[in-house]
Image (cartoon, rainbow, N blue to C red; front, side, top):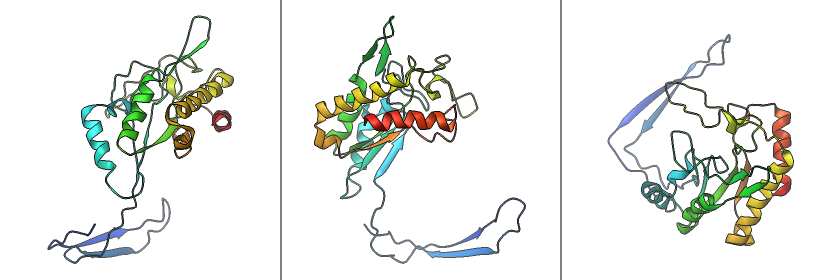
Length: 227
């Protein structure tokens, strides 16, 4: 891949500030000549992610993923939120669900990987690999199950609802992760799954996590141990 030539010369003036209450650094001027080829461009990007997992297997989602798979010779990994979030799979802004985990009236777990499998199948059929994000908290396991689904918009609203809380039972949380990994190994083969990346949660230092760092460490330990 080579840079496209174009008859444009642009100057960017970048002012670097040392931070609030400190003296600003001198301005730095960067001059770019976009009319001159810059040589070979070696793509460094091969990791992509998004919030709404249920768009993965829809028409436009499949088309976009197919395009991403062609970006370079290295394997492209795809990461999405809400792979364990409760719901019927209807997408919304910054929302998605798979209903992978529910409980019966006696509190016994039930696992349903139908939607999660559909997502991973879509990746693998296009030569992509899952970058598996272990999250978010199923409603039946959440310490604060209500309200659960958020209705956030760019105009405002609370996004950190029941999905962002720790599990009420860490043993069940660990079992959920174990059953998921075991299912993937059975469906896709252990050698395949061992080539995937696995991540516990997303950015627990901000609104994706509603409790303490210690609570997250406990969540992480249970998930990582079972993987």
